[in-house]
Image (cartoon, rainbow, N blue to C red; front, side):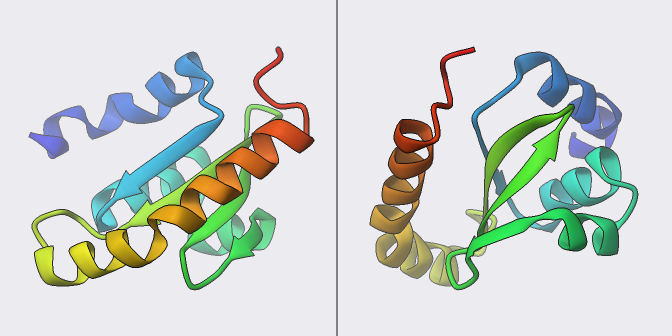
Length: 107
């Protein structure tokens, strides 16, 4: 199913203009790296890493800053559940800080 819809995801993200983007799994990560950016290297060079352990960074989509949280795919349950338990509060704190103190969500 994802292969059939992948070509639409980049434009959907641009239209929805999210403040927070959460991706799960490598295919979703590739949509950001190769759809919004041209490749993984360009994405990594332009991303502002907020928390490397929790895979949280700030990326730019159509001249807008977006909090990007990348997570394991839920099918990878063991690591995913550990990550969710360990990082859930960090993800929430980062989102709150950036949305509150940087004035996001007001446009």
